[in-house]
Image 1 (cartoon, helix red, strand yellow):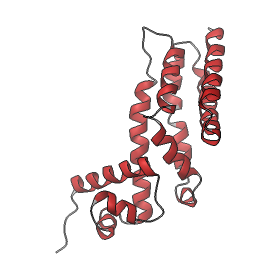
Image 2 (cartoon, rainbow, N blue to C red; image 1 turned 90 degrees about the horizontal axis):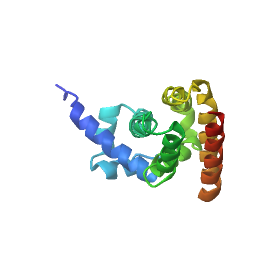
Image 3 (cartoon, helix red, strand yellow; image 1 turned 180 degrees about the vertical axis):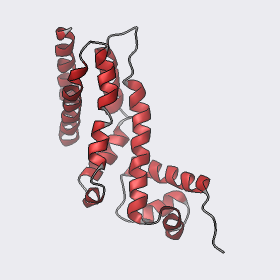
Length: 183
């Protein structure tokens, strides 16, 4: 008689793998995840089925963490203009707290593994439209959500390529001033 799956063990393993991936990026092999979890490759496969399923679970877990954290940053605060909220969210996303997500998803985007998760990029992008629409509704401009998202994504790609934080921050500040001017 085989063992029954234990969801709490699987979750503990997933949390450790996600922590590792956020710090170091998604690995090409299981060995780094084995070391990070203190278990065996056999146990990881037992709980997740395949290496690709484990990597998919890690991506989903990291995305859920990012959504929870960054989603809170994008919430409307009645005591301040939404452009201030966006500026604070940008500072967090591009600062030390947000960089692990940007690094992990950036490395993944460039890897061959991303082809095995074809819907991830779309979902990881469109997940942000709802929170941005809600926030921009406070400015009576929910239709600008796609534009704001495109500017953020473009500047994040620029920042990833150049590491020129000052220029990217200045560009985002300038963009926010155009939103303020529209009000």
